[in-house]
Image 1 (cartoon, one colour):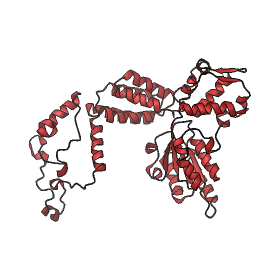
Image 2: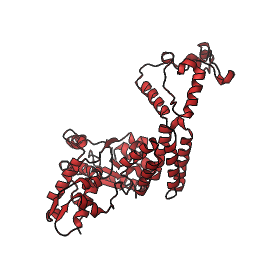
Image 3: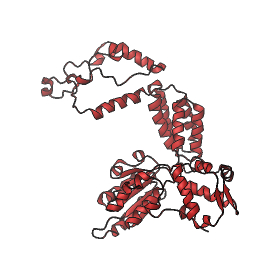
Image 4: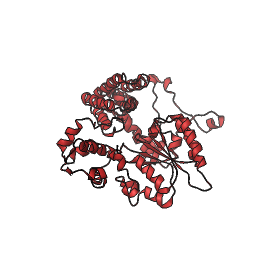
Amino acid sequence: MSAPLAERLRPKTLDQYIGQSHLVGPNGVFRKFFETGNVPSFILWGPPGVGKTTLAKIVATQLQRPFFTLSAVTSGVKDVREVIEAAKKQRFFDAKPPFLFIDEIHRFNKSQQDSLLGAVEQGVFTLIGATTENPSFEVISPLLSRCQVYVLKPMEDADLETLLDRALTTDAELKSREIEVHETGALFRFAGGDARKLLNILDIVIGASDGKVTITDRYVTDCLQQNIALYDKNGEQHYDVISAFIKSVRGSDPNAAVYYLARMLAGGEEPRFIARRLVILAAEDIGLANPNALLLANACFDTVHKIGMPEARIPLAETTIYLAASPKSNSAYAAINKALALVEHDTTNRPVPLHLRNAPTRLMQREGYGKDYKYAHDYAGGFAEQEFLPETLAGTKFYTPNESNAQELKIAERIRELWKDKYR
């Protein structure tokens, strides 16, 4: 039995590699790796079927270095240690370190990732990780800081067209068949930017007939019979669907939000990933319009961790509907972004007002630290008007209440009552 088409067509060199021109093009960083031979540890982040594993193998092959592999799904700390010992034995004099490729590195827990740190720091091997998840959330900071992150994009239709043409003109088995391509819309739509999925679909539609094959949108759809979901069954191809889910909650459409939730769950998406997105939505998009949303989202997050699927679908649905139906406000999100934008680009060392400074010593007291500070609880209503911002920022507004919802309207009215013109 022959190998799958995707394996038969796996590129062996960078010149055979399709897509990701920002990385492998004439001025791409991977070309420079081969010119200099200097390769840092790096992580390839992108959706399935865009060539992460292939690119890692090409790097090792063209640089002629040993290539160790681990799967984060099946490997543990013991396996990591065994690879480290094997890698140490591969080092001779000033030879370049071997590569260790870890597929789905986001599935490694903290202790497993910790076990990699020493070997990466000592140059025992050059780490190459592949992940479909945002490394900022899934890879521990010490390891992430020692790796470059390269983002791979879903393949565009032009890339899929090139791949299809290569398959039909270079693969011995396909060349032996009479195949005509009249339409590619369904092929590319079902592939969804995934090269491996495109080749798997091609295997299916060509294998459905012994004679001449005429590829049309109807023929492709009939062959697949909806068995190849637009959402990846391994729960990795979630970019478009999670985006639609987030925007449906933000747009206050519970029906659409539950529909996209169902698509993710049916596709095998990790429930904790969905729960984490709901916590972010509660803070970013509902915010002060309904502070209870964040409490419910956090409760959902904890519950999903405790019970898992299939029961986790219930609190996920409950929270999704509640958040979608809640009033919306991004005022807190906007306020912190505005404050961060100022702080990150503010080159002056603005002193904290003297009356707000702590005064634990007599010298600091003599210098005026804490002088004239008004302790709010000593005043009527628990409020005393005084300036809290640095003098040069006095009057700057970061928070603007969203008065279109009842909850924040109350906040706005209270702030104006306390501060009069300052918050108008």
